[in-house]
Length: 227
Image 1: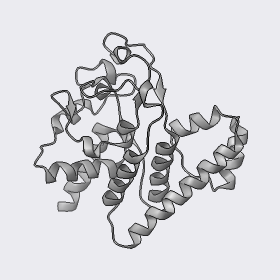
Image 2: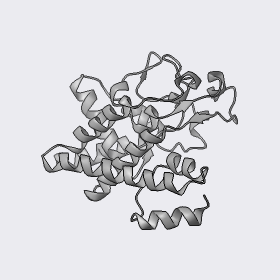
Image 3: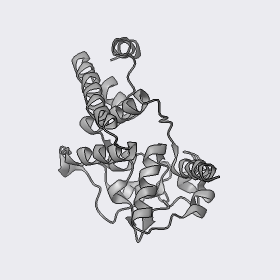
Image 4: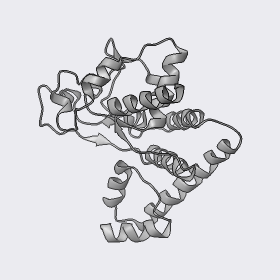
């Protein structure tokens, strides 16, 4: 579908938010019914979760429920996905997250007595999509012993990133200009999009930025609240 056709259907549904990965899939499929089905699914998922807000649940509690629902969705075909425990190449690339995702990770760290590496975030503050992979500070602040220390509450962009090309190609040190093939799970991207829509309906921000800048901004907000 071309941009004009996609825009026409978006307007019909009130320009619902949609993840970049999901948008790319839709544009590659000349199927108007698929797009309409996706728009409907985003609305329904957001509506269902909004009901929890009216019952006093925190946004981070609802985000956790989104994550649980996300993990129940089967990745197909799983045999083509090359990601395995202990392979942490993707933990050395730029990852963008929202404030809500950062808050949930911070809550998790507090509950489990885990210290956040604020110095690592300060070192990464000025890194960009183009400079992150080549920086000496590229390693994620939550990568411990080559494993994610906050795996249970890892952000959407971490949990939904799947590589289908040989894993060694993910090594940015050896292949700085390389391109890896990724798998997009439409159902999972629908959930992510529904979470963005829910925040929009609540009047809450969903600007995504690098993990470092998001955490440092959150820290500034929390410090100001204490004053």
